[in-house]
Length: 121
Image 1 (tube, rainbow, N blue to C red):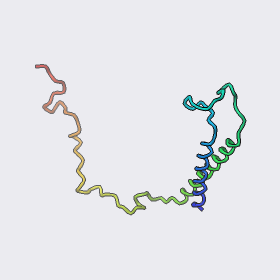
Image 2 (cartoon, one colour; image 1 turned 135 degrees about the vertical axis):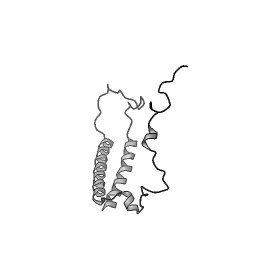
Image 3 (cartoon, rainbow, N blue to C red; image 1 turned 90 degrees about the horizontal axis):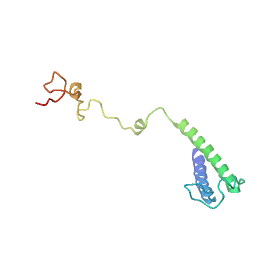
Image 4 (cartoon, helix red, strand yellow; image 1 turned 90 degrees about the vertical axis):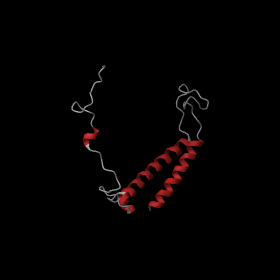
């Protein structure tokens, strides 16, 4: 069933692309487009290609939701790494370097022999 919905989804996607590309440009897109009065001409009536575009878009959204439901039903509680069968590296692996001590990450303080503010001597 999932494969059938996926094939229908792909056909709808290709059909939707084709129908959108067949439509006449109404301008306004980046200053380019076919002739027309723009805002002066008003809104034209819905064309047949416009109605087909809406129907294909609604069907595409429905198949998308259906495929999402199928994916949620097939999902297990495990992660991708668990399904691959690969074990993650151990935390105490001797090949990995140890983290530095917390003291070495701090800037030098007054008890260290380095002055905080350079002096002009």
